[in-house]
Structures are given as structure tokens and as C-alpha cells.
Image (cartoon, rainbow, N blue to C red; front, side, top):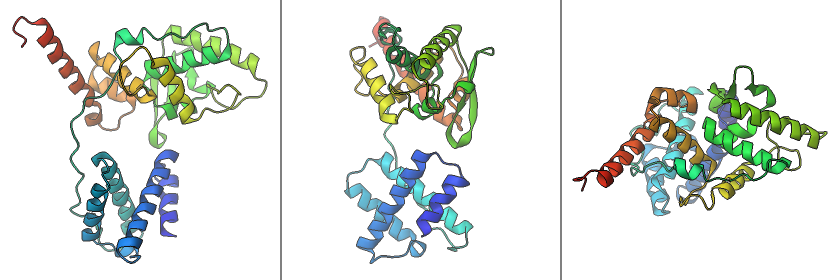
Length: 292
């Protein structure tokens, strides 16, 4: 089946992450469902630009957000590039298809004051110490939750005081660690190894010594941020935004933050500059005699 071949291609050759691969599969299966219902089962290789446009109109009628629709457009664009590459079509139907405009929204982050309110309790037991380390790694390195879950002991260079993070599309980056963080890792590893005789090949483990699921990490972070911030979203990605925003507020350059976050394009990192500008406007309005 063509979709299976495409999925194999983006997984093996493009090296998309497993989560991205699954999202692309869902998008393609949804598009095929639309072709079956509205175009009498039209083959994917027979699709024209007008069909793609009608699909976008259909998605808007389903009240999907523009961001979600844009991801589906990106999936189709990648799929038809693959079809061109394989000689299955002579022209891509994605010609002239543009991404929908997105509303300008500021990234959400936890203030430094609120971050310092997070309480970890007594680090004497494994779960508490693990949660403490989990939170600090996310906040002090800006890594994604998938990158956190994939960390192994060997990725931590204690002498060099740094960690190797395996990012999207198998791109690695190096992020510095503080002496305090190294001490916390040492303390955690000692307790972890004393707790589990057999354990998964990961730095951070769940309460049974196995690998952590995405929901596991999300729930841990959500619980720790409850009561300290009024943000509606309390996720690992909010800590990534917080990491970048606090660095920028302390004078770090966008280029440095780009490298630490593993962004391929500097434009992706510039969202944090917008956040800081808005913060400056707010401070000016509150502090200047004629700020209003």
C-alpha cells in the first residue's frame, strides 16, 4: 500500500520521530477517508490541486484550528514530494497550496518567582528524588519530554559537566549542566541502582524501574506546577518555553538559545524575543510615570 511505503520512507530515510510518523499516518488515513466519501475513492496519485483545496475547506468546516490544518497540509506536501521522487506522479497537487495564517500568540512560561515556589519534598525516597531530577532537567536544559525519556546514563558527561541530548531527526546537541545538577544526578543514580536490580536502559525510570511514557512525564510536571502558577497549561513544553525565556531575560543571545533548544531555524527561536518585548511593554506601562 502506498501509504505504508511512504511511512517506511519518512521513518527509515527521513528519520522522523515515532510520534511524527504516527501523526503523518493518521493524516494520510484521514485524507484517504475524505477521498472515499467525497470523491468515490479517488486514488492518491490522481488527486489534483482543486481536490486539496476542497479538503482544506472541509477541514475548516470541521472547525479544526489553523495550526492543525497546516500540519495536515505539511503531511500532504511531504507525501506528494515522495510521490514525485518515486515517479508516481508528474506534478504535485500541492502547487499553490499555502499554509493558513496563524494568530500571533505569545508563548506561555512560568515566572522565575513561581519556579522558585515549586516544592520537591524530601529526596530520601526514589520517586521524590526522580521527580525532582525530572523537573530540573526539563527546566535547566530546555529539552523536550521525548528527549528526556530517551536519556541514558552515558549521555551525561560528569567531568565535562554537560549532557548530550538526542533531538529530532537524530540530531544531537550538547547542553551544559551545573555542579548542583551533577550532584543531583549522582544522588539519584545511587538510589536508583539500590532500588532496582533489573531496570530499563534509561537514566530516568518510572516507579517500577521501566521506561516512562509521555503521559507519565506530563502528569508529573502538571502536579508540580499546580498551586504555583495560574497558567492553564502546565506541561513539560511550558518548562522548555520557560528555560528559553529566562535565558533571554538574563541576556543570552537568540543564536545561543537556538543551539541549546536544537532549533533548525532561528525564526523558530524568535518567538521568545516577542515575549520579552511584550514583557518590557508591560513593565514600562506599570513603572513609567507616563506609561499609560
